[in-house]
Length: 311
Image (tube, rainbow, N blue to C red):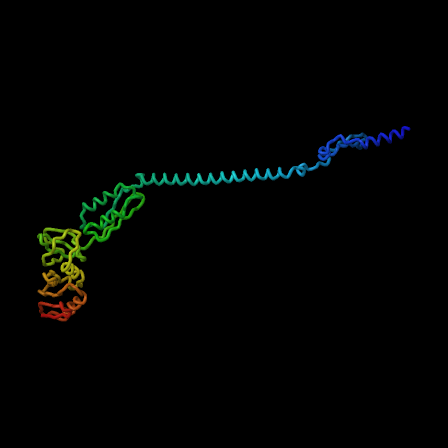
């Protein structure tokens, strides 16, 4: 009878529902105590904690993983935007600092013109040159208008070429090439006009200069800086074209009312050039004729027709 009761009890135990939830059963297995005997013969109870653990991550909802990735992506985007803003503000700050630095340099007395050197000025009006120097002196060297200074220099009648250059931190150099005076003529007003090879009036003076060739004939009243016309322009060009053997013998140049030009040389020799054109060919004829005549006495060499003749 007792055996039947035991079998019935075991059957009921097997049919009884598990009192644990499925979720808890999946998490960990029941810890089972184990009895071990050591070398001394004593029994020890060992509770193993190495139960199988089910990975909870595998049981998570896939939508949770997507949300997590989305949050990480948003964080990365925000960080990148922050870095871009930082770079932009850095560039802007450097630009503003550069502008401020340039403005400070432009207004700094350390970079202002403190010394102006002038080279090559002999005949040019010293007051005009001094006024140009004054317009440069003390100005910021990085913004001073050097081109305007050159233009002002070229307006001075005696100046043929001008170059203005700056040398940091505070020096400016003015280099001038002056026009060479070559002759002078008396004008209607009684004053003499000194001209260069281009016929430009360099100066208006009262007396007769001894260093330049006189052009005999009454010329127009011109101001310094203006250019004369024929026949005075032709006379200046002829003087400039003379070879050294004729230049050393030249006394005067005469222009007629008809526009013809003649030279007076030493030893009472007169050279008739006629109209002031084709100078080179006529000069070659004059030089050859002088060499051919040698020491013989002659008074006039006429090359106005292009073919030299002596009488």
